[in-house]
Image (tube, rainbow, N blue to C red; front, side, top):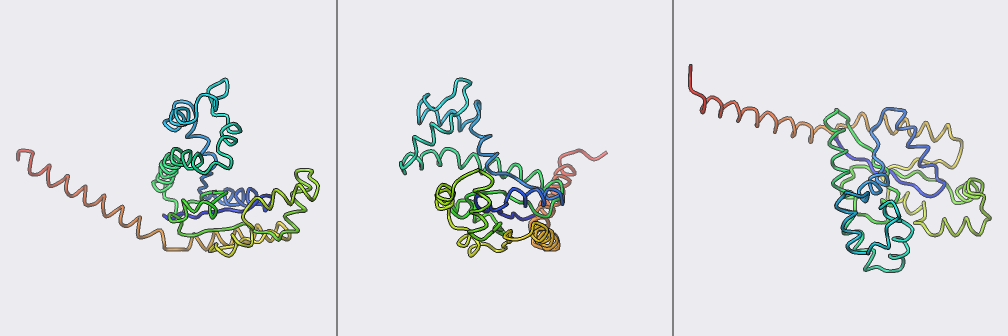
Length: 231
């Protein structure tokens, strides 16, 4: 099995494309959902965040107040690095656990929905393929203004706060162009899924895993023959 990192930008249509892959039966892991999960009360990252940033980052119910925490690390590289050092290892562990579940269920590949895939670069090394859901800037701007009821200035400010989609497209292995009709975008996603399903890149890991299991089984058999008395 191999990993496919999928990203996009605000109002590019990433969520709609993810839904297409899910409808096709693909395994999808939302890294943002994992990031929220690992900081829940009772988890190690929650305790370490409170120790590092104080109880002021807590809501009344004990959950992390993401807005307060975000304000604390805003324009504070040292504090941001501290938070990342707490959360990123826990996110990777949960991500690997979820991935292994899909591996055991026989999936050939898993899609990881990672909004900041190219910005942080932390997870890039684990991805066999990277996919960007792209649309041209004017289309992105028009969709964002309509969706969020924003004026042009506010919409441009939100888009400018992100890495440009054209830059992400240059770095990706695959680009799904969502600038036009949705039916065309959907077809691109279906064709990419078919291409990934035909790929043999999942075989080395799966064969290695099966070989390892066979080796363990053989060792257990030999130990049993050696340790147990003959009838």
